Length: 385
Image (cartoon, rainbow, N blue to C red; front, side, top):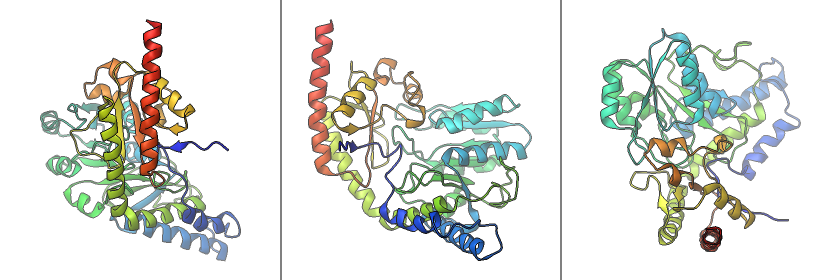
């Protein structure tokens, strides 16, 4: 059976075998509803409580600050819409490079009376300090700036941004979905700096799809998106997805145990990859900024990204031409456009995101196939002209 080399770990990750083993009892014999009072329900509740402790430990939070959701998109929506519903309409600030599950809820809130300000970024994708200072002078009620970008991997100095926002009284949220498992997360320290909430997700760290969390300062009042039986501190009603939550907890335990080793290993692999990319003439986006250790976002002048991804896929390498959640959009990357990248170069963008299954041998093979593919595409372009 054909098995391509998987180099798209920012989109999703393979389920870790230990995570599957932890989930299996709750897919079979331990099928109770965690809200039930009998032993089946109590067993499910104990499993959810243990997973909550595991997520809290991996994020440097207290278990009572962990609110389970179905995904990073729901966590982000819960914070923005839930906070907005608890406040009078005011100023909401989001960075220009946020994931669509922040940008689009912000657009919805704009139609409900909120003023939305988009924070400009520099050529590396970092929030511009001058623009941010001007924004804070307008005293926003809500601010959301992602900790790491899903396309470029560029890290924002969220601690400094949150500290600067504290005097305004704004509630500050950060999408940390891409950071969990790749870098250490410490919500206690972030919260001390002024970050009120973090979004994290299971399937980015070897866990199952369908489980995520909003790590939330309990002093922040949110209105729930889903009303009902009052689960998750009355912030997310509905019968808990116990198998997925158990898997999320197990994945967090693994991530916390291995994060330092994984960070070093992934950084070494990315260095190997980018040395080869530079040699072949690639432009690497965000290369001048601190980035996630596993992410390279690049383009070759005159080469279409979708075409290159298609050729690489047929050659056995699964990479991305942008964010998986918006891959149906034929327009140039909104992130790269915000960074001032020319549209013709932005259309060539390809993302390689490394993970637990990535090896140095795969990187070497990829670079070799990439070289041959680029030569082929260049030859076809020359013939067409």
